[in-house]
Image 1 (cartoon, rainbow, N blue to C red):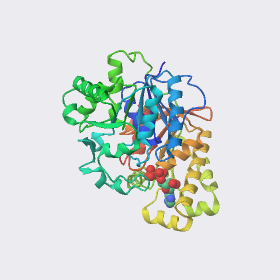
Image 2 (spheres, rainbow, N blue to C red; image 1 turned 90 degrees about the vertical axis):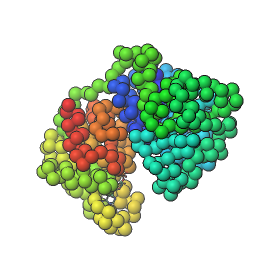
Image 3 (spheres, helix red, strand yellow; image 1 turned 90 degrees about the horizontal axis):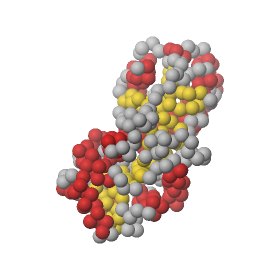
Image 4 (tube, rainbow, N blue to C red; image 1 turned 135 degrees about the vertical axis):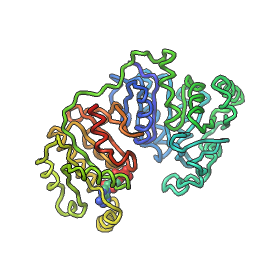
Length: 422
Ligand code: ADP
């Protein structure tokens, strides 16, 4: 299989979000954590490389992205997608603009589009201004983000200091005229030397028009949503053959482990729902872990029947979290919990768990690393933005789902198990 679309995302959850939307098409989507050290052996039609470049120094972000591009080209890709946050998380230095310009230079193209809109999730662009729900970006909570405070809502103004070439706008009126007219508009702007085009989108229909108009650009950039129509477009005209490999669920043993290190409001509800069903559960206490280490949890795990899908959790209410953080520090408490859940994941796998459910963004990063997972095939969607994934860990094929913070409904842990069974 040759890769049809090579995607580069500036963080891990952004990459899973994009990969999940592409996988709705049923075509095989592969997600790589970092640029693989080996050349592509069995590339998927859609390859997504997750970088950690959102807030990295510009030169580092550009260098990592170039490496990712090289790998995707080796996989056969001729079209590329640069995925960043739907709130355009960046500073006056970058990294959205500099990375896009570096990719354009490598690809020898002199125009790309910027469309971070995700209408279903309340991100829309009108007259070049980005809205979060009904609020302009600069009035949304993003204005106080610790690393990338967004103090302007106008994407042209945000992008201009980040790039060397001209920035322009294809507004909603242009998009409303359809794909052919939008393509003409972009060509006219290109003739005028406009390299960077912000494109308005307030609804899914706009994204469909934009994707159709831009589907053959060497480089598109945006949030995940504008890429969602691409698989169907590529299938319709044969760019992607109808017999392209489908995402396939492997046959797996029933052994399951649920690990929760998220303390978000929704995860607290999910843990309460799951424990109320009488499932075997063990609660981690960061203070006792700091004193006695993880052995008690590991001993408990060793006694469990994994077919009952036991739960190990540090999930706690805000007061308990604060109490632990006061004694151990925020980072200290976090690390001790992450290390314990990681050790439990490895122990459970070694005892036969083949279905691993993890709650918590940081927790997921730690567990994935401990399990030695660097490539995931995207499988069935459990909740919006949270798919099952299939990967290799310790020589075993396993299914892994990584749920950050507030994703999923109250019954997520049982939903996940039911989705995989079907
Ligand atoms: P979320 O996706 O909900 O933000 P994360 O896993 O990213 O979840 O972050 C939760 C952090 O809180 C992790 O570093 C985790 O180790 C830590 N943590 C979990 N339980 C506790 C607890 N009881 N006390 C203090 N910190 C905790």
